[in-house]
Image (cartoon, rainbow, N blue to C red; front, side, top):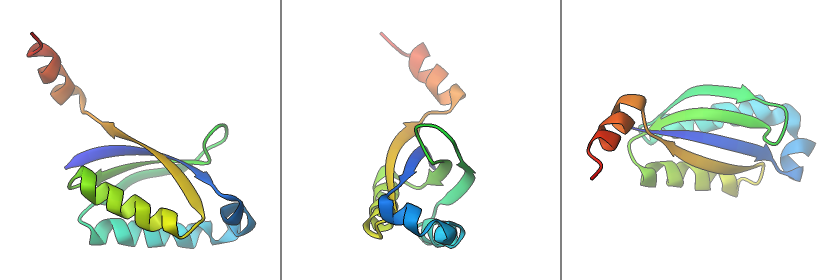
Length: 97
């Protein structure tokens, strides 16, 4: 499974309907699970981003499908980072030429 860090912001529509955010999270959780993934962590944040989430998904394509589906609803915008676990990153570094 691939690991992704999702940095998100509410759109104007998302802020206007902020009280619906917990229900939107449940929709995102169900969608992620239906695609074979898991939302491992979710935090509302202050600062540049309104929320941060850590998600496991079967592939980049699966993650992209989920994020595009959620983004099309109009309440959020996301920036996504694919994460590499420490041991896997260390192995890559070890094998550098």
